[in-house]
Amino acid sequence: CTCYRPNRRETWLFSRFSTGWSCGLHADWTELTNCVPGVLDRRDPAALRTPRKFYYITLLRDPVSRYLSEWRHVQRGATWKTSLHMCDGRTPTPEELPPCYEGTDWSGCTLQEFMDCPYNLANNRQVRMLADLSLVGCYNLSFIPEGKRAQLLLESAKKNLRGMAFFGLTEFQRKTQYLFERTFNLKFIRPFMQYNSTRAGGVEVDEDTIRRIEELNELDMQLYDYAKDLFQQRYQYKRQLERREQRLRSREERLLHRAKEALPAEDAEEPGRVPTEDYMSHIIEKW
Image (tube, rainbow, N blue to C red; front, side, top):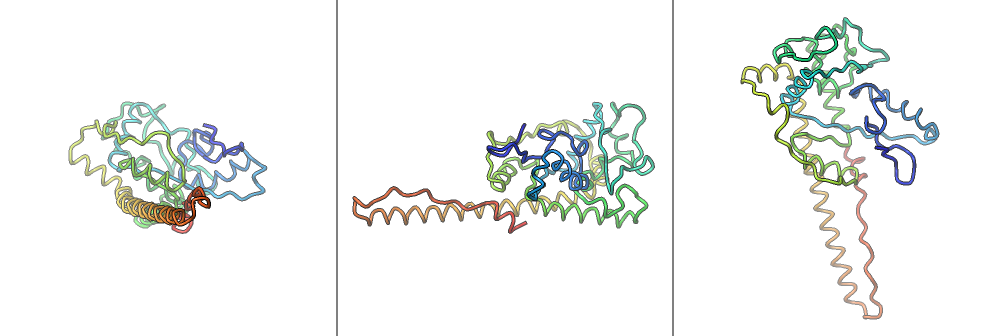
């Protein structure tokens, strides 16, 4: 994916498909906001003359399903060894972020083993990756009390989510596509599909295990509830704008039609194209 701007060799999309893992494997909000500007400046020094404006986007998922999916991924041998976890200019020490396993990977681990590791970054991953970790001393768990740390992380994740031009929910694929297209005035080639059969969906777990996963991901559970409400608000807002635009277009078309009928036949002109509203202005005003 070159992801160039029309008629210009300037990248508009920063992702692993266009720029690679330039800020480390699966970089979080803390890493990206500190890394992306410098990476793009080095890639395109000429663009330094004009300031850039970044729009961060993300997708959230039901915490239990997401946790089970990550476990299955790790069980098959996946690792995040090339993740940097940069924060305040440094990576965490081994004491701050101990490994959950010995050896090259954690393949074959049971769900119980996965849940039992107190250092597992799968716990509350969505809150951690959306929050500003500098507020809590990065990965230094002794920086502030645990309860205060959790509250600061959750509130920071909510704030950063609100500040994003767009975010979607895996469980609402079509609405996610609609919001993206309306926000950025871009159209996908194919409609999003809602797949109910996933790796996490194929895992059979009892109620006690589900409750345990919810406890381990209590912050993610709260964030997801908040995100669902905010997502629906944004969706309804965009739908209202769309309906209003449709009414305005219909009204203008009727007025043009009446004006054309009122003119003598030799003076009638072809109706011009009805202008459409700049959707991006709503993003700037609303968020």
